[in-house]
Length: 80
Image (cartoon, rainbow, N blue to C red; front, side, top):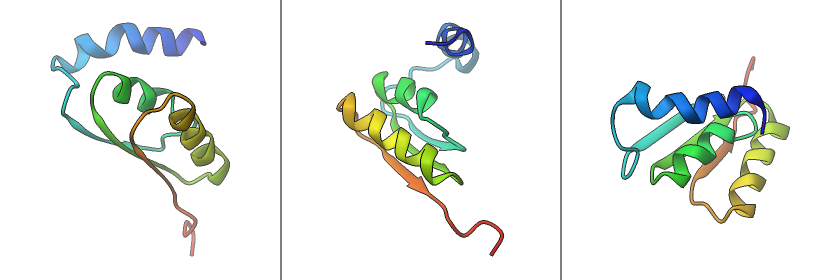
């Protein structure tokens, strides 16, 4: 786990000031899904999307591997 994600996991609960359980979160530009994973592991319903098919697939793989529920979407219509 890289330093920035460790910092994210430490600071985000204090920054948002609410429990994640039962929240619905739209993770725009979800990339590899680290933040989306954190939200899902803490009880949020997560929808993530990214312009990169590779990164969206990485997010989906992360969710499947960790047996998390969420919807990860690749948007291929950018610039069309």
